Image (cartoon, rainbow, N blue to C red; front, top):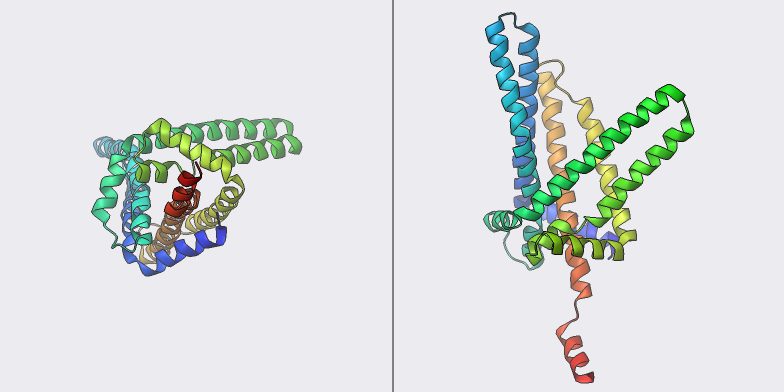
Length: 273
C-alpha cells in the first residue's frame, strides 16, 4: 500500500466531489444540535427555582441522553457510506448517496458489531485511565504512569490496525460479521506498518481538531461571539472527518486491487497448471 497515494487520492476526492461531505455534514449538525440543547438545558437548570419546571427540564435531559446511542449508530452508518462512494469515484461513476446509504444499511450487523466493540474498548480505556489516575495520585510514581499510558496507547493502535478494514470489507464484499472481521484482521496484519502510519496521522488530525473544538465551547451562552467560533470549528470537523472517512476505503481498495491477479495473470497461471 502506497501511503502517499492513499492520502493524495482521498484529498483529490475531498476537493473535487462536494457530495462526499453530505454524510458528515448531517452527523456533525446533529452532534452540534445536541451540544446546543445541552448548553440551553444547563442554563435552564442553573436558573430555575420552580420544582415543576425543574422536573420538566430533567425529563428533557433524559430524552437527550436516550438519543445519544441512536446518534452513535447514525454516525457509524454515515461512516459506512464512504466505501461505496469511494468505489463509485474510482470507477468514474457519479456518487449516489442513496446507493451508499443502502449499502451501509445492508451491512448493519457489522456496523453494530463495530459499535459495540468500540464502546467496550472505550469502557476498558475509561476504567484503566481512572485506575491509573488513582494509582498515580496515591503513589506519585511517574514510571507507572508512563508504562500504563504506553500500554493503553498500544492497545488502541493494535485494535485500530485489526479493525481498520472492517467496514469497507463488509460494505464492498457484502460479508457477514465473522467473515468481515477475518478479512480486516488478515489485511491489517499484512499491512500493519502502513496502517500504523495512517492511524498515527489520523490520530494527529483528530487530536488537533478536538483541541481546537475544546477552545470553541459555548460556555458563555448562545451569543454571536460564542456561536461563530463554534460553527467554524464544526466546519473544520466536517472537513477532517470526511477526509478520514475517505482515506479508509481508499486504502482498502488499493490493497485489495493490487492483491487480486489480473485476467492476464490468471490465464497464464491456468495455462501453467
